[in-house]
Length: 280
Image (tube, rainbow, N blue to C red; front, side):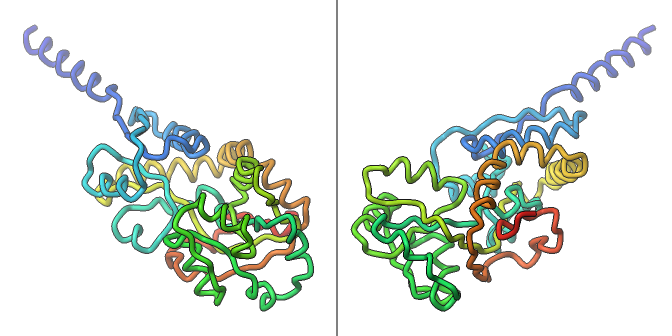
């Protein structure tokens, strides 16, 4: 009886350990889409019993990656794909935003509302000057494409510079441009109605290099969600209106080369990307 009792206690201990939640701290709690998606993706691995906990301390993304590298406090970071990050961390190479973060809309002075309307070539487009923050990757991409950039030291400073006609346009993400212009309604600015600017880019989940098991679980969950349609359901619930609005406006698109995109980016998988220059 003693042997059976000890064996039964051992089984209870194993069951208890397996049922304990595995806490995962993620950085990027303000992004409701990626939080919902990550929660859904990990639900495909119920045996792991993951418990997501937001890291709410206000800090720069660079510092969050420092914690991730040291396996301290943070287990998952949501961020753009860069060659440097790909070397230091384990990226789950599944573009969460379908490339939407690489589609930009020019914001211009209302007095310059027709600035883009007559542009019919890339050469003419390159003659216009955008304003960008000096450390943004956009600035490097523009420079590589032979576009002169007016640099600013803060985002608010750039809005003020645009209002003073210090540069021609402020390229902003289609994911946030409406809110940004509304927040600066005291300025005599507007969303330019005829043009989109595009360069390929990706947005990934990152984990520590040594956390291969978590990376595999996230990857399997993303692929399963894509296959059963739930990935697109979540994506469209958050971004469908923006996509439909942009496509219905039939804007002309100026495509830029992004030489800083990692070579391993899965460009060949068409189901991963959206092309706003078509009505597909």
